[in-house]
Amino acid sequence: MDDKPQETWSGDETRRREKTREQGESREQDGAPERGKAPGRAGRGRRVRFGSAAAGCAVLGGVLVLLPWERGADGLPGPTGARARAAVAGGVPASLPDLEALVEERERRLKEHPKDAESWAVLGAARVEQGRRLGDPARYSRAERALRTSLKVRPRDNAAALRGLAVLANARRDHPAALEWGERARKLEPKRWTTYPPLVEAYAGLGDDEAAERMLDRLKALRSDPAVMALAAAVYRDKGRQEDAAVQLADAAAAAGEPAERASYLEQAGQLAWERGDREDALGYFREAVRIDPDQWAARAGQGRALAALGRTTEALGAYRAALAGQPLPEYELELGELYESLGLRQEARVHYDLVRSRVREAAAHGADGDLVLGRFEADHGDPEAAVRRLRTKWERQPSTAVADALGWALHRSGRSEEALEFAVRATEETHGGGVRRALHAFHRGMIEYELGRGGSPLLERSRELGGGPARRHLREALRINPYFSPLRVPQAKAALERLGESPVGDGPPDWS
Image 1 (spheres, rainbow, N blue to C red):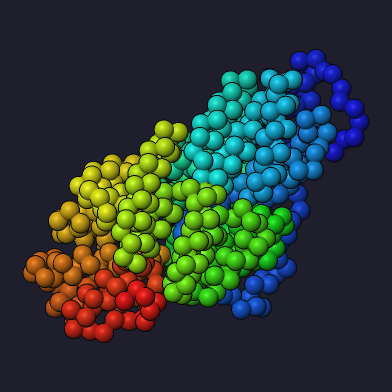
Image 2 (tube, rainbow, N blue to C red):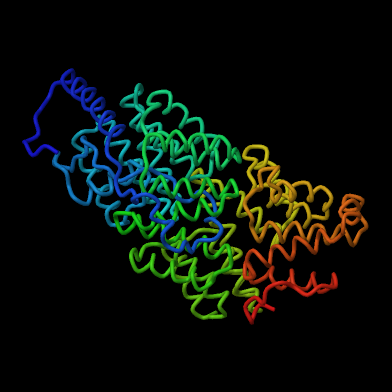
């Protein structure tokens, strides 16, 4: 980084220097030494406590590297702005104070240099990350304006803005658009490592796990560090490779640099522990994540899940309220509503159920897609027919395992269990892309099979001939994977197993039975 005073350049000189700088940046990043890589397979020498993988492709990004063209508002690097700029450039979690400092810094610079395409792209990327961390979809609209302004200022060879639009589309859960923007960026810079994380997330969101793994392999050929390890963990999880995912995430958490980055990976570790039903381990990871980064709201929601499973209901309610205060996501509203309902507090539950709809509407006003969470909500607590319509449309556009599970359950809840079973099989059978073992998916399939078995459906006749009990098998599997996966559904699974004439697996939390 240059400490010399900022020079004033002509337009031609500026473009020449920008081109030289970008070429040098490409050489530096493509050949830069790896940061924070764990020596050898350090994770193999310690006990890996992670079970199944974190939900979704939640950690998708690159690395913390100081780019040569990072400048503060005065043209010189600012420490907080540089940290956040380096993070958002590679998709690594940054602290909220650093992000705010970066946004303010870029806004000041753009008042003086409104034709600075790079600063517009940086501003847009920072606002996307703010939107994610704060659960504030209005930031996405502001991010889009900044990124499109960058493209307007520099319509050609502007890979940074294209990548930013891909990241924005993924944040909005518009994975087809993310794929389009990401592929345009890849055409411009096929050898730049930052090109690939948005493509990995886009393909994963579309349910194309093979393409996601191909993009990951190309990324790993260019770069290997904690954020890439965490990205690999998410991809391996979607392929059903839980042990590989656990090792990658363990190494990422151990080698992470900035506190916000490490806290994010610890939150992912908590999700891994939670999904295999290890309540105490999960709670420990979530608490450590919050200790390191108090703005890690996903970890606070995770604390709510783990504490509820441990029977510590008052603490669980407080953790959920804290998560919603900092990151008011509709999925947290749904979880808290279901916890209240499991306690018999239906009026309190209804307050949060109503907020699910309003938060999805607010997000939709800013281009974010909340169809999956709203479809799940309507199937269980609202209008199942509306859920089917919404989820069918989503399935046509984004045929992922999660959508298959939600659509199958909505069809079942609307009285079409035979059609529902086709989607439940897709969500749970590896041959159909459902390689990851999820307790909720197994529960849904088991309950659909239970209903079909009661009705004498010919679809289950072959299973009965081969030893019977498809419903019994999948309900038992749900409780084996995670005996605490839902305060409402665990008692239902146990009751169904008892009616089938078999004792349920797993004790579950005392107050859920």
